[in-house]
Image 1 (cartoon, rainbow, N blue to C red):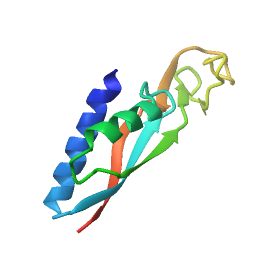
Image 2: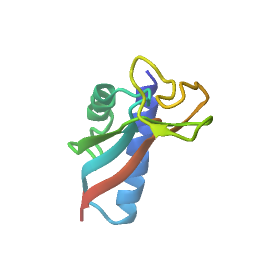
Image 3: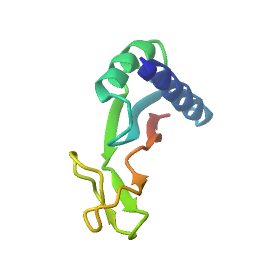
Length: 114
């Protein structure tokens, strides 16, 4: 259900920036989501279709760019993409890790008509 609040924020940000550029229509939004972000693309799209009604963003296409997870081992410094079954370092088997990418969530860009 947190996708509704997130989608409302995306709409507010997009409309605010588009109107600052005297846009008449928002045509596309590019959203970056990490592999481990807890948002579901289809849920965001579902809420978008409802809440953008009656705004300059109605009918805009949402583009989702998924960023794969990458970890760095704090024991040996190896950077790697984790296996879905195990997060440990493939080099030294340590579980002391830091997430480098994969948790992102941001509105990267919008396309407008003026």
